[in-house]
Image 1 (cartoon, rainbow, N blue to C red):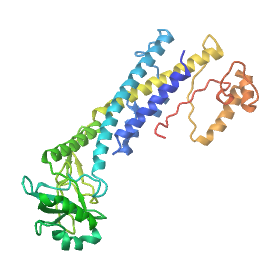
Image 2: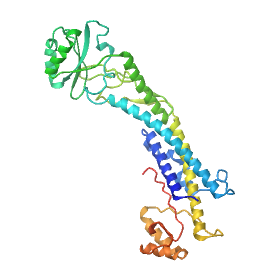
Image 3: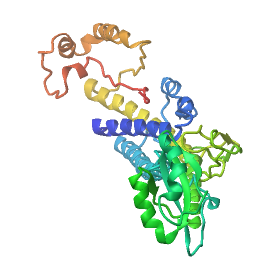
Image 4: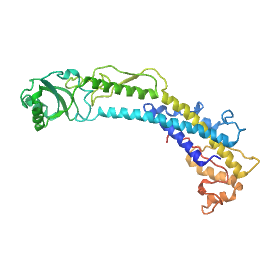
Length: 373
């Protein structure tokens, strides 16, 4: 009627939905538990005050019909969960890939959030501006020698525009015809010319993509827009202005993260869907538990129906063993073989394929509300 597989699948779905709420609310994990509700109340309260939903699952229809309704409901939620979380994970992965470009050292990270149009000589037939990474201990050497590394280097054209813990990023302007010779001489002096072409359209596209992904990801949790706190960022030692990815006031690599100000409050579509459907799935799961108790009790004790279902919640895990002993003592007359098997694992219960530890002289099903553990 209600298989163990169906029950385990629904429990797995509940836990995956709870974990999805955790992921979506990564910036507010302290509020996750208050968003995991069933019919507007916390899970423990719902379970301890459970009543069968006659409107959704009419008791007059055959049990197989009730099970089919529950199964279809959970199956639809599971399919929707897969598609929605897949879309969210793709969004998050794309954002992480873009963010990775903005981390690392000057040799590997994107430079589009560091350089500005003013750093380059553009649209010149004869001149070109190169970006050179110079080790910190070689700053003085660079200043003294860069003009003589090759012919036709523009005097006093170098400028430090960014630095990290290992070195600095300098500009230098020279004639195009000596570019290859300059690169060779720079390498010989342990100066690294970073290949970079300033494309204003591409830089703008990259910044807009980052802004869009940040906004889309934020809106899955909260519908409010994100305002970035204004304020210019400069390198303290060199007063070099940095042009950031997605926002001209973003700090450079190694600087403190930008401060954000949230405007308005409201749930985003993914969080809202998760909350509504977590509630629906949890309610369906508890109905499945109730069905299993009923069906197993009829199979165990027969008709007419003469049994009482109760909910027992030990105050602490250490009390579980003592509770089992008391229950076994009180109800051992219902199934002497099962009661004996608890004390002696060598005793076999005819027709039972479960481990003896899973079988008791009373009907028992576990409800685990520790969904975030």
